[in-house]
Length: 512
Image (cartoon, rainbow, N blue to C red; front, side):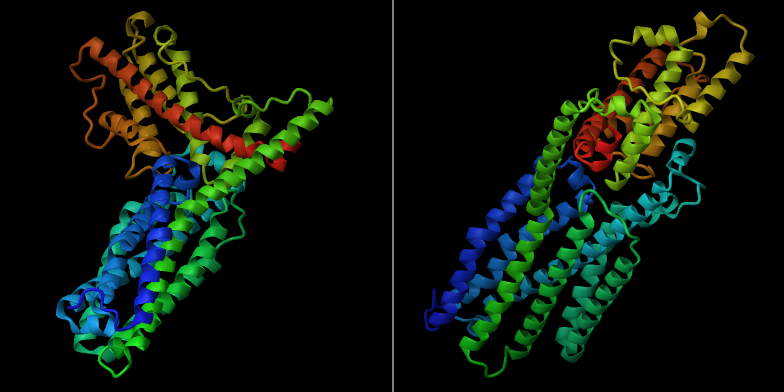
């Protein structure tokens, strides 16, 4: 094996140019994209773009650009041409390993894009169900039996934790089948891959056409459409070029022609993977900055108009809390959150605020003692329906109180611990549980785990009937509220981001 064989100057130049593009453009793009994901992991722009799938796509595309593309290029540089490298056992083995791995990445990325389309379809359908002003049903339901397809089937058909293993299993089976057919029946290998591409395209078109007309504030639909077209186009081009290359390995094609064909394969692979990283990270971040700038510009315009108008002189644009204190403002903000697929944030804060208000009403002495440690509060519209969870908690307390004849002061904090635990468990199951929550909110894994320790499937909570000390029960009461408050503060930060965008909308301007 010759080191840097220069028999084919044109081929060598093309391969070096490809590696230069890889080092100068693709690698920095990957590093910057992964940095953006890490830094903005909890930003709603990434959360609502199925951030786990986004991370997987970005990570495996970056791995391909750092490892597998060089595996396809370096042996050809060393041996002087693609055909010569194919004749060297070691080089051929490296190239084939890189090719099959690249095919696995291409197939899995394609299925992941389709998965994003499917999950976005769920989000859009859910938003359509909520936009008809029936979202209040969610406050009076645990999201079971409400007759909504998305609410009742979210965890069954739209769980990232369930879909990701299926994607990789199916991808591995497709690539393994292709590899076996390529060795045993080469004639059937290419039709098999063509059938796969046709099925993916047909399925994507069917799901896409079923989208109802919906304008999401985050621009996800347009982004997926552009990326799906780019990815399917370059993937099909790469498939055609690699198929042609496989057919010409043992033919009399010249080294220069083979190099041109191989350079085309690597260029398509390089473009597709770099575009993947860009569209899933840098493009999203750029859109976020652009949207923020536009919202701030619109907000400045609103503030200017407010300063010149008697009608708008009392506008308060510093926080979303005063707005949702009135029913019309609450409903207006709800419809904005629906467009951002973030209604669960406001619903969680609403139910927790109602629950805390009920605790203050029923256990005033205990809540006064905890006032400094539990300062979070939220004023809600008086006309807003009471949460079903809070209503059932109140009924349980009333029922237990009517059966007990002791003085309130001796039982105020401990008498209804079972009802308290039941209500907290219902809030956890509805909003926190990462496996079963139908309206899962985005909080840190540490805070989610801390609540799971108390109310998860493996938690061992102490109830009224258990032999627990009074101090232990009071500690559970306090710990539970502190951990829910911590989750509420996380969600409040996300709501502040949503409110920043809301302030720049025409609906907000008309409301003020």
